[in-house]
Length: 269
Image (cartoon, rainbow, N blue to C red; front, top):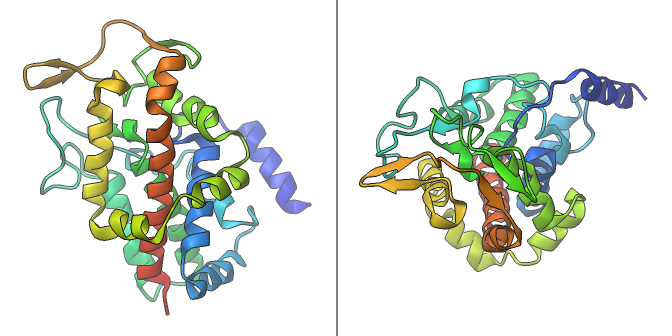
């Protein structure tokens, strides 16, 4: 009852925020990761979760950094309009970003920190990997990752929220457990190996950035080497949804597989 009361209180008091993949997407990612992780890693997650007062399951703690929003500048990484991707510096335009956040929380989980600190780092890490695979969290700061790009049609009011929530719900539905089960069926051992061959999160960020710049996303208007902001509203219609349905599904799957990969690295005894 205490956990239920706290959860209801958070829902009532928390402001509405743009959050990568929305709650449903984050839960799908972390549910997939938990299922794929090594048995001993799942056991360690359960052990750490005994200190959790708000949520009962790993998939649920992955929404924690958005309720309320904490470590705000670490949910995304911004690039220059002329950038082709992330090279040496993990955070090209800021001291901190989602890539540095992954590194710092991985370090905590790999250390001799207290269980309380490790639990907090675990909750953040699950969220960060989900963030990294939402394409508009690897994008441009002057339009706030698409928050200033208006949309109409099936998803509104802006492109960021369309990718956060609307496209996810239209692709996998509202039940994160059912969605994780359905996606997990398509994740073969060969795909797991393929998606973790490049184990540097910067490579994963560059994949997301390529989706941000892709024609089907309609976020990037090319003028020479520059990726400029669209001047007109983007229409999210049946054709847009269909063109990006598999992208959304694959990004959720990749995020789950790669999160499991990181958890196996830092939590395996």
